[in-house]
Length: 193
Figure (cartoon, rainbow, N blue to C red):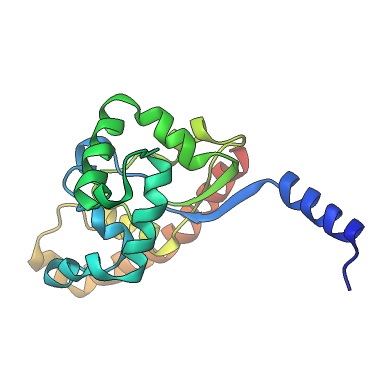
C-alpha cells in the first residue's frame, strides 16, 4: 500500500523525469501541410473512408483537446470542425512557432524515424531541435537505406542491361557489400550527433 510520502515521491519523479518521444515522424513543412486533410490526424483512413472520421470517438476527443491547444474561448455550441480550421489557420499564419512550442512543451528529446519521407516534404529531423532540450536523434530505417543504395547502383541502367546475368551478379555483389558499409557510416554519424 502506498503511503502519502510514496505518492509525493512518485509525483516528484513524474514531474522531473524528462519526456522522450521515442518514435516520432517529421512534421510536414507548411507548403505541404495545406494539401493534407487536417482531419486525417485522428485516423489512418483514406479517400472515401476518411469522410466518416467526423463521427468517430477519436475525432470527437481530438476536437476537444484542440480546443485547449488553440485557446478557444468562445461558446461550446459554436466549437466545431470549421471553427477549429479557421482558428488553426490564424495560428499557422501568425503564431506557428508558438504553436509548435506548445505542442513540444516538456519534450526533452525526440527519436525521429524519418525513413517514411520519400518526397522531401517534411522538416529535417534537426529542425525539430529548436523545440527540445536535447538534439533530436535519428532512427535509421535500414530498409529505406537499402532502397536508396539500390537506386544509386541501378542509376541509369537500361532494361536490357539490367536483365543480363553478368549485370545481376555485379549488382548483387555491389549491393551486398554496400549495405553494411552504409550502415557503418550511418552508425558513426549517429554517434557524432
